[in-house]
Image (cartoon, rainbow, N blue to C red; front, side, top):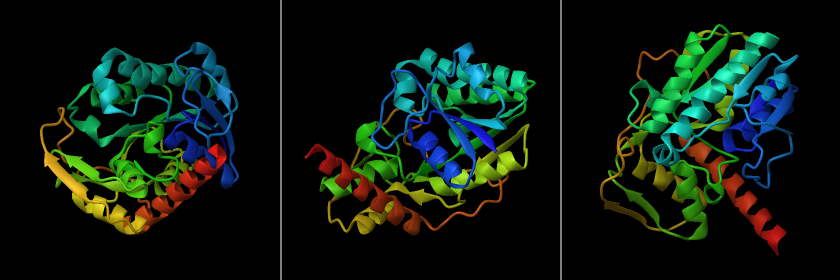
Amino acid sequence: MRLVVTGAGGFLGWRTAELLEGRGHEVVRVTRPGGVRRRFARAGAEADAGDPAARRLLAGCDAVLHFAGIPDPARGRADPAWAVRMNAGTTLNLLEGCLEHGCGLVYPSTVRAADPPDPYALSKRLGEDVCRLHRAPAAVVRLTSVFGPGQVAREGATGAISSFAACALAGEPIVLPGNPHRTRDFVYVDDVVGALERLVAGARWNETFTLASGAATPLVEAAELVRAAAGSSVPVETPGGALPAGEDASYAATPEAPGLGFDVRPLDEAVRLYVDWLRGYSAAESGSRA
């Protein structure tokens, strides 16, 4: 398949492009002009996914996997209008391109969009609505807490496990504000990419899916898994305190949510794989600065 991956300079977009290329697909990587350039990300076509000129990149492709957008609730709260433009406006622009060039669009959303607690989740829900209302073929995929290679906290990536791992490897305390027993459904990124590949290959358009492990893990337990994987004895601190709306809630897929029947590796195994990748990445980065 020939696939366009937007947001290819970020965590999900980069890892998706890497794995799909490794499986023999032709991948057109699209990065935003002026965006953050991470050391591991390879060069691709520079284009703003919200610019009509970006639609030409969809010519001859089977699908676009649209990872460009705002993945961070804090940034969504700081500038709600920008979040809507990046998460919903860019999606509408690419759907117009899909209609023109005869391809489909995969829109990665979040389980938080089911009942949006904040501007970020609302912007993702609006992107879902655009997909459902547009004439171009599209699939909405609600993700839970995805983590894995390419997620580097010090480079701006969000996510509990990436934050925990960064602290554990640096010998710094893992701090869990709010309720440390709130839960997340953690899924390893490589498992998610395999499910998305099958979705596109099967042309599962005009449906909404949820990708989840089905296991609710308290954050304090996830922190212990990270400490074990890192061989670290840093303390896990739970100072409590109030968090912004939606941040102190538990998130998981509802039991009736339609999924894609994908295999999910055990969380302890996935955490070990990620910590090993991050340790190697950090060592290589330190060597390159020496």
